[in-house]
Structure formats: C-alpha cells, structure tokens
Image (cartoon, rainbow, N blue to C red; front, side, top):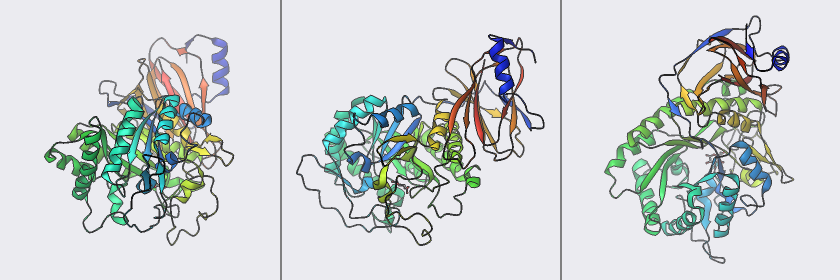
Length: 497
Ligand code: BDP
C-alpha cells in the first residue's frame, strides 16, 4: 500500500504496533455506503440518562456540590438529557411548603418490581432549585416526570408550574406517569385500564397543569413494554379537543428481566433482539403519524435492578453501543439508559418473585442497581461503568448523519454503521460482538484520520476502555479499499478523509 503521510515516523510506529490493517486469515467484508440517501441526523442531545424521582428526593444527589457526579455527566456527554421518573415517581409527592402533610394516597398493593406501597418520596422546591443548578453545571437538560399513579392533578399542577419557572430552558418537557401500560398491576383497575382510560386520566392532569402553566409541553406515554400504545395514541390524538402541547412520544425498553430470566446471558444480549426492532418500527410509525420526535426514555439490559456479571460487564458496553446506534438508525431523538446509585434505588424495586431466590438478597445493603451507567460507591464516589463507555462510543456520532450501509458479514456477529460527520468526513462504526472472530472491514476512501477503540480484556470484564489507536493522517492519492481489522469483542469508530 502506498500512503502519503504527514509524519512518516509516527505512521511506521503506528502500523507496526497496532492491528489496524487486515490480519491473515480473518474474514474480510467490503462495506458499501450510500451517501446519497441520508437516513437521519443524530441530535446533539441524543445521549441521556434516566434516574428515579427517588434520587431527586435525596438532598445530596442533584446539587452543585456533587462535583463528581457533575464530572461524570459531562464525561458521558456535553449536551445530554436527564430524564427523571421511574416507578418511584408514582410513590412520590410534592411538598410545596415545609410542614405540608402528604395528601391522602389511594390504597395500592406492593407487587414485585415496584416500590413497597408504604414508601413515599418527598419532592420539594429546594430539590428543584438544586436540580436547576446541577443541570446548568453539567450542560444537560431534563425531561421531568410527574406522578400519575397516586398524585392529585392540583399537586402536579403546582409542581409543574414551579418546575417550568425554575428549570427554564433546561426543561425539555414534562412526563406524567411512568410505565402506564402496566398500571393495571397495582395502580389502576386492570379490568378497565387501557389506552383510552389512560388518555382520559392523563388529560385531566395535563389540563390542570396547563391551567397553571400555559407554556407546559409534554411527552407521552412512557410505556414499559407495550409500544403498540404509541400508534394507538397516534390514532386517538386527532380527536382530542383542546389539545395540550405534545412535543414527544416515548417508551421504555429492557433487553430482559428479571435477573433470573434464562434469557439474561451475554450470548443472548449480543444478538439482535427482534423485539427492539419491532418496537422501534412502532415508535417510528407513531412519530411519523403525529410528526413528533420519539425517544427511548428509560431502559437497560435487565429490569429489576440488573444482573451482576451481565449488566455490569463489558458485554453491556458493546450492547449499549449497538442498541443506541440501532435506535438512531430508526430515527430516535435520543436514548436514556436507567440507573442511579445507592441501596435505596435497589430497595425501591420491592419484593422478589418466586424463582428469584438465586439472586442477591436485596435486603442487605447493595452498592447499586447493577445496570447503572454511573455507579455510586459506598464511599460516595461516582465511577463510570462499562455500559457508560458503550454510550460514549455511540455518542461520538451525535450530530452526525447516518447513511445506509451494505455489508455481507457472513457468520460474524458484527454491526456496522456509517455516518457523515458535521465536518463532512465519513465515520464508520464497527461493533464486533462476536466473542471469537475478528473481522476486517474494507472501506473505500483516500485515508484514515482517526480511530477510536472500545475494548476490554474480555466480555465478562468489569471494565471498558475507550481509547485511540492512531492520530496520524494517512492519505493516498486515489480512493481505494482501506482494510481495518476489528478484533473479536471490541468496537472501532474509524474516521475517513
Ligand atoms: C422499570 C422502572 C424502574 C425500575 C426498573 C427495574 O420504571 O423504576 O427501577 O424497572 O426494574 O420498570 O430495574
């Protein structure tokens, strides 16, 4: 190969010490990229986290003083979106003034995976003020979730008005209700609950909020798993009179759960989940029908707190990179992976189901939910978990425009994405989820300007590293196939001239 290069010495050193180029005997695939038919520009605020309202109720989490958490948010994304909600949201209440008593709450049963019905989390104006300062310090915005399950419309209206005033342009929009498709399990009468009953309920709250805060914007329905609710809502929405301002659709997604589910294996996690794709198609259909963005606002590898050795290892990193870019290629406006720290979050998951006995006992102090992208250690420090590095990998394409890719990858378990970067360069992300086989991808170009790598010692490793393989510009006179080797269980983001 003949390259013109900016620095001969660096290039020689780089190509000798790193397997950038094809390795003997490795399957090679030609990647063809259709630059004429752009799919979708990934918004700059594509990357997001989802935290419980329980975390908002804690005085020490979202504050200006929590420098380590602020640093972790910024390291994950310069313009991320923090979504607040989760099942603890339905067990929280707005304390407008110190000393105000909680409103009487309708009786609910404690069911597995949901907070103990006796728990109650207090959200006060001070928490919201601190949240505003925290968001400003991170450069992030917020999707603010309110309680539909057990709150009174007038209290939501009070809280929403205060949130809108206090967060200002740091507020993306409000959500009212978390995982409303499963309200029939414990929060509503399962015999009468469904999309229409939900819409009626939601409108009561949204209209009470608008009456106090006319500028209120909303995202709905934030379903747990039944994404058919989105097209159903799209069909019902035109007939809604005097509509609240709807700015986004949303749903959740957990690859599997609970942790005892036999599907919770690394091997399964790294194969494409047909349910993720069919949900993405439904969300896109509804988004297109209503001409609204759609976002995956809460999800992760395994609900009910995640599974050790599955949710907190490098496999989850490759999963996150691939899942996020899959959703980007279906036109999603963003993805919020769920997490947060501390024993309380783990406790808020409630009782275990029969068959879950094998899982760690949640009555003993737990450092965290196992899937969290940012871990809160018992000593109060925050650290980035493997899943976080997969998010960062996908986040490198925020602002880029995805392009259709064709590649015959045979029996190698690999995902390939291509995108035009804002500076006009072409980037190709290769996520090699194969535990054993490395692969060479051939991209026709004049040269490479940058290679980022996502690696770890193994799929089971409790670590992940986002590195850089080469900084040297290599340019050839005419475009030709440039082979790039991507080892088993690793990912590369290659930028071409
Ligand atoms: C989701 C809930 C979230 C939980 C999570 C889990 O919205 O609050 O923490 O499940 O079970 O359904 O891990």
